[in-house]
Every structure is written in C-alpha cells, then in structure tokens.
Image (cartoon, rainbow, N blue to C red; front, top):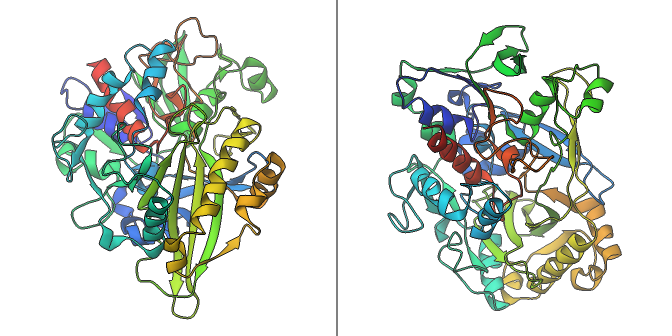
Amino acid sequence: MVIVGGGTSGAVLAARLSEDPARSVLLLEAGPDDAAYPEVVRVPEREYDAILSAAVGVQWGVPVGAASSPTLFYRGEVLGGTSAVNFMATVRGQPDDYDGWAAAGCDGWGWDDVLPAMRRAETDRDFGHQALHGDTGPITVQRWPEETWAACHRALYDGAVELGVRPVDDINDPMQVPGVGVFPGSVQASGERLSVSQAYLDAEVRARANLTVRCEAPVARVLLEDGRAVGVELRSGEVIEAGEVILCAGAIESPKLLLLSGIGPAGDLRALNIDPVLDLPGVGANLQDHVGLGCIYHRPEAETLVGSPAKTVLVGDTGRGRGVDFHVLACPISSSEAGGTLFQVFVFHLLPRSRGRLTLTSADPAAIPTLDLPLLDGDDLDDLATVVELVGRWEQTAAFAAIGASRLSPAGDLVAGSASRDGMRALLDSSTYTYFHQVGTCAMGPDDDPDAVLDPHLRVRGVDGLRVADASAMPTIVRGNTYLGCVMLAERLADLMA
C-alpha cells in the first residue's frame, strides 16, 4: 500500500501498519527527510522563526472573513509535516466533540472510542499511567515548567486568576476546564521539539523490511481504474502501483489530490478540464478553522526566552451554552537590549458556525488552491467580542501592569471598542489570525449524508482501495489544537484496519 504524506497522520499510520510484516508499506513525503530539520525547527525558543520562515514549509496569504488583508496560512512540507513547525500542543478537545461525531453517524468515533488511541500515542511525563493519560506511547508529553515561561506567559496566567478564572493542573481533563493552565507539549528530554516522524519513525521502525520511506516525492494524483485506486502518479511523471492508497496529506492537500484525480464536484472539475470520475460534492467543502484576533504588545525590558511557543493558556467559555469555546494565549516574538520585547496575545474561536470551501485554481498539481474561509461573521463575531473584552480587562490587572507592557495594535480600548459586530469587524480588519487548524474538507459521515466524502472507516465513498486519514476527515472541528487529533485519527484507523 501507498501512504501519501509523511506528516502528523501519515508518519503514525506508516509506523502502525508496518507492524504487520504481511503488509508492504510505502510512505511518500513531498518534502525533505526530518534529518534536514534546521535549528529553527528543532529549538522551541525559535518557534516564531519556524512558523514565519519557509525553511520546511509552504506559506501564502488567504483572505479570511472580515479582514481586508490576507492572513498567513502555513503548513509543514517535510517528514513530520506541520508537527515540525506547530506549537507542539498536545491538546485533545472536549469529549462532546467526538461524541458529536458518533451521534451524527460516525460510528466508532465517540470519546470512549478515541480516548484509548490518544492514550496509546503518548508518554505523559507529568501524569503517567492514568485514566486520561498513557505512559508507553511514542510521543513524550510534558507541561512547560514555570522556569521556561516568558513574562507574557506569567502575566496571562496570573492576570486570568486575578479575573476569577480557575487555575487548573491539566487542561486535557474535561472536568477541570474552563480554567487557565499550561500547554502540554511534545518535547524531547533534551528540550528540543519532538515531531511525529521523530517519535514514530525512529531508526528501528525505519529498518523494517516491509516499510519504505521516500522523501521529496510529491504526488500529482491518484490513479483510478474501474472504480478502484490502483496507485499514484508523482509530479515527476513516475507511476507507482499499489493495492491500496491512503491520503494523509492534510486538510489542504488531500482534497486537492482527490480533485486532481477527478473526484469532487463534477462541474468544478470540468471547468478546469479535469475529467470527473466520481461526482462527490463534499470534496473541498465543509472547511473549518480556528480563527481569531491577535494583539501585539511591547515591553521595554529584554528577555532571554523569546520566540518560544505559547506556554500558558486560558481555556474559556463565553457562557452561551456551548461549553468551552475559546482559547487566549500569549507568545513572545522577539527581544533585544535596544528594542525591548515584543509579544502577541491571541484570541481564538473554537466553535465556528460558518463553513468555507477549498477549490482548485488550475489542474497544475503544484498550484496553491483557493481557500474561502468566511468564519468571522454573525454570532461568531458576538462570541469573539466577549473574549476580546476579556483581554481588555486583563490589560487592567496588576499582573499585566507588572510587566510594563503597552499594546501596539490594534489601537483603541478593547472593552469599549469591541462591543458591537461593527467594532469587531474594525478590529479584525488588520488583526485576523488563524490557529492553523484547518479541518473538514474530506469529511466522514453516514451513508445518508450526500456531502460525506468518507465512511466511518475513512474509505472514499464510491471508490475501492482509497482512504483519507488526516484533519480533512474530521466532520466538525474539535475544541483544541488539532495536532493530537490527527495522531488519533491515524491510530484509530490502524485499529480499524487490523
């Protein structure tokens, strides 16, 4: 079988499926091997450099919601995928997220089904073997110790407590949130980042006779004959035959590959001179993301720990009856003796109501698709306004005053300026950000859902021998960082295929 994409889901799936010596597994990755990770990727203190550079990724600007200027979109194109450039946050979302999948017809994907896969994936250095945590998995997890916090992390945590938010030990315990706590991160004992490929595809796994890992091999399309996937064609023109193909290329590349292969909305395909093989209107639809506002601050004092990822987080509930629905987090950007320290505070909406779409711009496999993300309007704006006002109140706490910071953007009083939808649109016009959590573009669903691309075994409907296992398969977004959710999808599919 061929697995397309050696990222957060593909590396896991290749490792798990190749545990069976009767299977022959070829993993194809478009980018370089993880041995090529530069320091900017390996060292957490250079997190911002990793995201903003193109060292191991692809980035472009995408118009989002009310914003008049494009928002940065980014994905890792390297073995390990976006786990090589993300915040390393192993946050799971809420049980209701997964129970909602099951209730909507995705049998086998409820909280009780997926929790064992999450536990199997991790070795939690803080909690060890517990009902919610594991101690034998490839991904080592620990919460950032206080001595690694920057001033903005400390101020966010202490300021939230001042405002009456409950401090919690484990933000992955649904009984403890809402609250303010510390991100669990996938970090090596040395303190360096641990990507999924480093965790799952170690030297012992890569030495298996039935597993081949091939990097710098971008795929152009899936090859189909008589309703069955029979292999893939690389952009170089090389054809690779396979008895089964599993796409793990992510919420952008997986639907793009289906469309390039003639699977998707027939009218859209014909408009690009792609022969429709299977009319599946849901391919590229249902696009969701965690989108929000970013505030930039300056403090005159220089710091040593800069560019590090978000380490403290407020996991909150706007009180609209939907449970946990936002994150507030702080990230240092840069620091120097002459210029002081810059940091950002982000507000991300975790339960967007709106949906977007991914469409091709051409039949060229190298072309970047168009992403339509109208995620910041209506009730979503009202929810976000509540949280922005909370940030305004945080700016009035003693904890914030203690670090001597001032906000550079957006301008104005957050408490007074964001009370209306028009006020929020004005703020978002220049300060919209994404959490890089795109999902849903090849959503699984029940047989009677005409927009479901996949069945609950992640098989593409109407095509034999073709599956999709990555964030694109999520029918609805989870209320947390999607990193561990992608690991879980691959772990769970390995169970189902066994």
